[in-house]
Length: 247
Length: 291
Image (tube, rainbow over all chains, first blue to last red; front, side):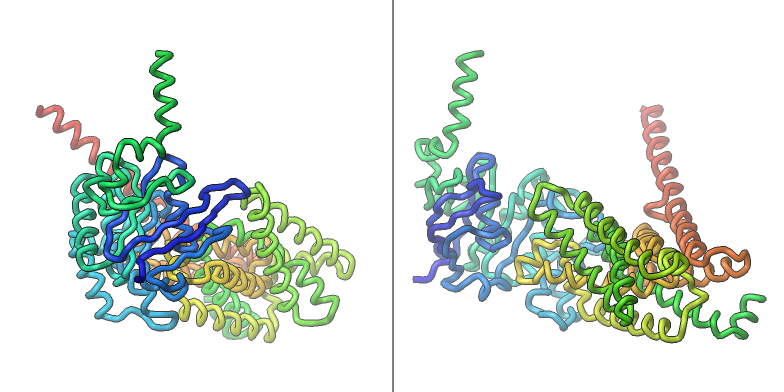
């Protein structure tokens, strides 16, 4: 059986400080997967190391049973909003058009059909009215929808989103969740770094619970249980308990 | 009119004008990527760092182009190495490496040549442009424009969203050094028009002016190239009329264009921003009076 994602013995460190310790898991195709854990648990680090955006110390990663380099163009990555330069001179439609670049290769340029496809993807996220705006003129939620449209334009099989719901309005959040579920229903695999536990159980099929090590991985109903969640959030909870005692 | 007569009459003037217009154009084009990638300081560094290369080329009796490209790229690599392998931040690494190269260059030149040549390299002497220099500038110009046209998509996506370009397999680091090489070529081409010290102005000022006027990268590139060329023409004109240094005159014309955009740009300019802010405030005041 080929998995959407198979990770064996993954170790990652920053300048000698261990960020991820011996991560092992497999995820089937066609799942909407949440990567959760406390602050500093290495959620974004995991997502980035899966795509080799940061170097790993050790580990074997297979995506749809193949190496990353064979699959790169079929993977869409949506960065954290805080990582972007929003003053860049680029319009909304041209941002979405970037999603067609991986399939175009080096010397081919986007043509009319690519522009139409980009516009169609904008319509899917309900942002077509803003197609000629500069991206910095949008609200946070609108920006996130545009970046999701760019990921759609890439016609990827694997979608990776880093904290897409941080600081965005409820309409945008609902639109994004609806589209991610549609993608899942079409058989695509979706990985989302997420920190808001209150929504985790309704948004995702599977959870990867992290705290530098892999605490648990599996269907939501198995992972999202107090005794298991405690393991990841233990240090924060003991801190709160101590505070209660002193206060 | 006198300027046009002189232009028709003296070939040295024609060469000067053609060369400086080409320099204005290619500086404008590369400058757009330099400011969008937040590498203005890097532009300053590379332009200074070609100095030892020029001196070494002179010693070896080869075209200064080769030595300049070598030390320019070495500087870019050195800066990257220091900032990635220590806690020194990028701007400090730039300050350390380029001044070292520049100092080596000054020592080399003072060893082998008189100070007048140093003066020309530092500040340019566009009226002394020889035919061979003009051709080198033209060839460099064609290389730059072809490279930017051919790799426009890749330059755009890696400047705007380097994480995405890395995710789909573009070699970001290679693109960075490729751009640094183009930057070095531009600097070499600019040596005689504006000189090492002022080339950074030609890279940044026209591009920054265009940045205030448009929200499209392609339009920004064309505008920036036009501002560069206009600055070259009017700067050269003013330097002849008032008999002042041509490089400095060209730079000040581009600064003047920037000042116009800074004040009067419809979207970004200080003037219209103030007017819009006042309108919003007075509308609020009217509403609260009615309420």
